[in-house]
Length: 145
Length: 145
DNA sequence: TTCTTTATTTGTAATTCTTATAATCTATTC
DNA sequence: GAATAGATTATAAGAATTACAAATAAAGAA
Image (cartoon, rainbow over all chains, first blue to last red):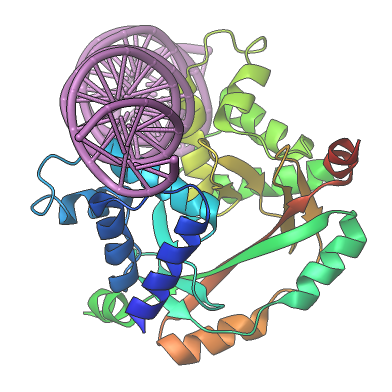
């Protein structure tokens, strides 16, 4: 299942002028296997032993390539660094204000919001982004102790 | 109307241990009067002549104070720098992918999304954030020429 | 009003994340 | 296998934000 969408991503890349390199493949693989939403640095560090000579720039370069190809999304929060997420099915994110944990949250797409925004503003709407903030169960427990 | 909510903000601050300084007041004033969603640097530059000696650090410090007091929201997009917005009534933002313009979009709060997220994830939900992306009318015209 | 306490401002340095650049390397095509 | 274009690497540069310590000023009490 993860590997299926990984292969899909690879073929999407091949269809444009993007070459498949070991580093690139590893970054994609990591993104697809990780249920978390890693930062560029997370990715860099986790591939450090497999690719001791890999540069941080490679990670950033490739994340941009993936973003341009539409197979990866960048998530920016108040935090310093961006996080990256594979584009798979429609889901939103629930984020803990305390520890930063991100949990996927499946919910039907808010199409009507897009339609209304289109009418009200005259924009050609392409996309939207929804995040829900709160405190996760662990952090809630901790604070009550 | 703008001044009413400004005074409200001032009294919210006074209720905690926050002192009112000219710089602080000017930043608040600017945030309330500006219909755009300025960056820290926008604020700094616009107050430059009134406060030639003001430090950028002051702007950042106060934006954090306002955020902590809940009277200002930080908006982070893919762009490099955060934007800041007064917390007034329920509204969302429609953002142009081309020129970065931000338009306010009034829409009933998505309470049911919060409720569902609470049930599904076990989080204590506090807040959510929705943004809608597209191309504004001007940029659409430009691209068609 | 003047004094005292404590928050705030300032200026600068430091940090952090991200991008630019140029040289080297390598995947792909012929 | 050689040529060509794209990728990687290493490093430097850039931009946004924060940390810090000294100087300043707001708010309440005497």
